[in-house]
Length: 128
Image (cartoon, rainbow, N blue to C red; front, side, top):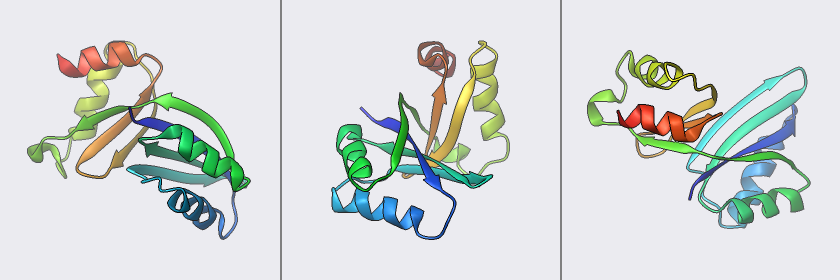
């Protein structure tokens, strides 16, 4: 099962490279990523298939893994890729059920990733 890992980095040159190298050396494929910085802190969300191996590699590299969450991975239909309004449609289905989206990003192979406060209700809303 794919998981979303939240990794906290210092906001300086080389941190993302160090993270990527550690994961690559451990054989971890990054299937999706979102990375931002603010006030000297980098926050990275990673979609990985084997979170235990990924976490161990990151910890051994001296990086801080802040959390692990179950990820909702959505296979986007061909007609929804690069089409205005897709994000709004997906987010509306989820939010209309009172579910909060805590993280959203794109992944490889035309997929979207959501991390929510209630994945069961979010999945039901997306399946409807």
